[in-house]
Length: 242
Image 1 (cartoon, rainbow, N blue to C red):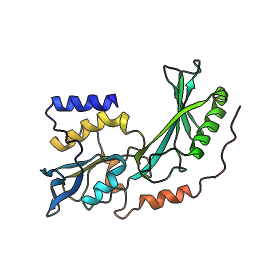
Image 2: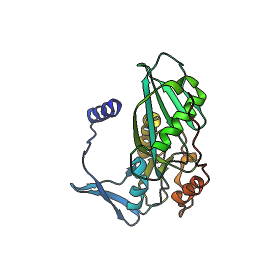
Image 3: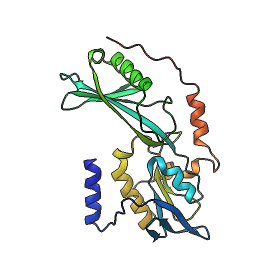
């Protein structure tokens, strides 16, 4: 949260106008080209729109008549009580990951098709049990700890886990920077730099061809593809250790 506020303050110092509490209602198109964005506070005239809406990227794409196949998937995190120093590394395996904070709490997350496509940022007992069981298998000392809090959020993901970056073929002026599949916060600074270069000069300092939207078929349905993977996920929960 502090980093996001810091980015906002730095942007304002550079002359950026940030319109809070201003919902994008539509994208103005004329002859297949972007001409503006309609909001509840009026229309913002612009020849370029950047779709950096995260889990809402597919909805923004619909406003432009463009299929942006980003899945809005729930993610959950749990945190333990403060523990003595156990490890220094970021641990990942068995579809979970965890790290120990400076205060001693171990923060545990995971990634897998057990999570639903939804906008409901709520925790589920099944996922908390999964995290607890699999993390304590990797690090048995965690089996004796207590979970003290949990939270959830929504991320924007693609089926190939590769972000979508660059201008769409249609409409002209519609640019995407979304689908980072859980890595958007870390990749935000370089993404902003490359997208700015692309818009201003047409030549980003790093190639973006691998991230083009056209790698997906125009009628590709990411939710159907994801649900097909989810249907194969085992329903058996891991046994808790300790």
